[in-house]
Length: 392
Ligand SMILES: [Zn+2]
Image (cartoon, rainbow, N blue to C red; front, top):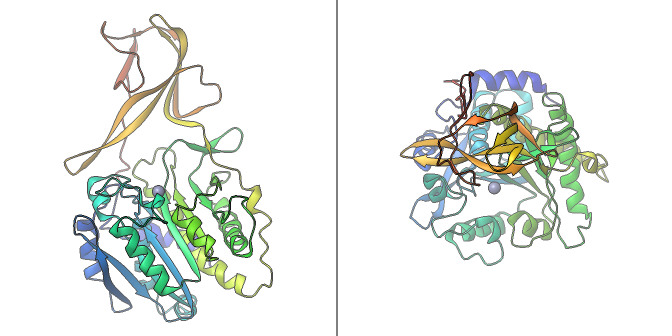
């Protein structure tokens, strides 16, 4: 296996610098696609509802076919950044024996942006307001058809379904943020551990082992309820091992620049794991079920013991709504819960110790109300805002 600490260091100084933060659109990636070296071949597969091109990037000459796609949900861009980091890594290290091996064992086909209209609008859905990850059977959308035609013609041996998840997910007790989550999807309602599913589980076990070194107790296992309308479940149903990646929240990293590196490392590890699997008769997937399941137990902020008019002393949760304003992504703090939140954790928490904060007389204590700051007499106001990492 490669040295993942060294890979992490490489990423830190060599990641694709043209891509950063959360708002990644076709305009951002097209110049990169246009200038990829001759190690890669780029082809347009078709067009989105709003007529944006959807491209695939192919590289490697080997017999094992891996198909991956990112930004099927337009606002989930972390894995897109990681894919371009991966391209950059292959290009920069193509003389290294470990990289030569990957390029001769595999043919990689990657679709960096399956939903360019959603990416532009910063929405999960496409321009027809359809969730492409619920359209695997109907294929009512051009983007879904493009993916279906691609996997039908390519007949991949493995699929990578690359997504991002919200800040609400935690793992373990007491919960830690689910920085990365994975799933080997079910292929039937009974969630049978079939041979194909088992392969995915073995790879995820291996990914988890690698990641524990960097983000201990922060890797989650996604819910495996079967839904044939999801692309991963459909592919697994066709006996193609499929791995769902969910790039999650590293505390404080709303730009997802830290999670990005773990996605990059995980992509490389998948390829190494596949080679390892090839040499095994029966994959050992035992530790998959010991990865803790994702729980919805986090809010961006929790204000403990706040004394509210007519309610009394309670807790208040604040969740950011991500809103595109022009070309800038804003994080709008909104009231998400007012209750005793004993089973929940805030990525940031403050305890007001039963004090009454100052609010204007007409302030509306309701779910969805924007709340930018809280001031308790004699103290500086606590402001709810997202800080950028200033990594540029
Ligand atoms: Zn998603």
